[in-house]
Amino acid sequence: MNRVDPRKLRAAGVSPQKLSYLKDLSARVVKGTLDLESLESMTDEEIIEVLDEVKGIGPWTVHMFLIFTLGRPDVLPVGDYGIQTSVQSIYGLPELPNKADFERLAERWRPYSTVASLYLWHARDRPEAEGASKDK
Image (cartoon, rainbow, N blue to C red; front, side, top):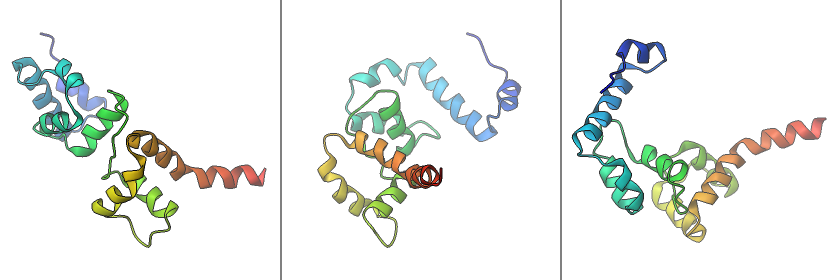
């Protein structure tokens, strides 16, 4: 097995903390305690449970994996600050929505919460873009 020199990873901007996370992830794959190929056939909840065991991987990271790697259609990353701020702005909320309020609002987006999430990320940048285009 080829090993990557940790100094090369550090030079590429990988922090010592992230390096420890990568080592844990790769050790699990090499040992066979984490089968990456089997993830695709699991439910979102099963994937969250399996990957949450890996050092440095939490719900936000798993949600991004579900959306951008597996292309799952109904992922709601309630912990994403960008989406929280978009929901706050669009719904005219006085503060960022808590998890329960966010999930209640998002019920109508099912089974396409991923699509709504993508629009919410885009909407976060939208007012600046519209203001700039009106000035030209």
